[in-house]
Image (tube, rainbow, N blue to C red; front, top):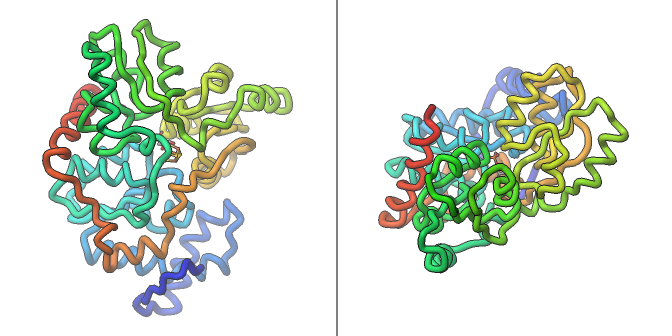
Length: 343
Ligand code: 13P
Ligand code: SF4
């Protein structure tokens, strides 16, 4: 494992390394990782876990992260909503966010006294990058009576210009909870179209999309249904309506996790980023996960070495900072979401 970063670790005994490799192997063998590979990774996960204790740090990881992160070093793994709740509740001094930058920014917005670290500063998101705070101001000027709901996959500036935030776990609930007949929903055009089908409200959308979810098609869903009649098909609501119309569950990643856990079915297709199916293969080794998934190049920018380096000696760009005025306004949008979804 070499990404050009040389990282010095403390010395662990052969026994400590063997036990750590066995711990990793007990999870990662479900994904065909060998004991030899786990032995290579073990000193690094040991060192990251030691440093977390030393620095009173919590490591929050999105379900799309690689399995060595999810099962080797994460303290909590989940979706955008669950991760932001954890970030809000933690008593740790440092939050290391293994996800994309907008997620780390969200943690900083709601927990400004903590040090929030992001291993890969260039872990963007095609949705977040599709819209600026200035764009939101112009939209509001064109539709002055419509409140703005922003998907959490947005920058702090966009959250600051919005009335309320939402995640994939609660987007429809937030839309329905507002009294207004007309709503600006940004920036995901597909999520906006999917919501528009479930509400009487007029949804004004933006032209953003997720590069991971936009290419899945309803035709491919039909092909898989024909080939595997007993397959349960779950899709992320960032997919287009042509997919969403044909699946057994449309939702966020945590909705899919809950569905798989509760279901008696044995065969699933998760139409989303590939990391989620890997997580499910480890956690439900009696079930089969087949078919469509894409990799998110942003999510996959994090790895054990840049996480170790960021924990040990963060570079200035790995420490999340947000101008206080922007942070306070963005926090209002997030707090409104928490208030509306707390029960
Ligand atoms: P979830 O909140 O559903 O995990 O989605 C985050 C994301 O980036 C989906 O592409
Ligand atoms: Fe953004 Fe899509 Fe990657 Fe999620 S999967 S971080 S929405 S680009």
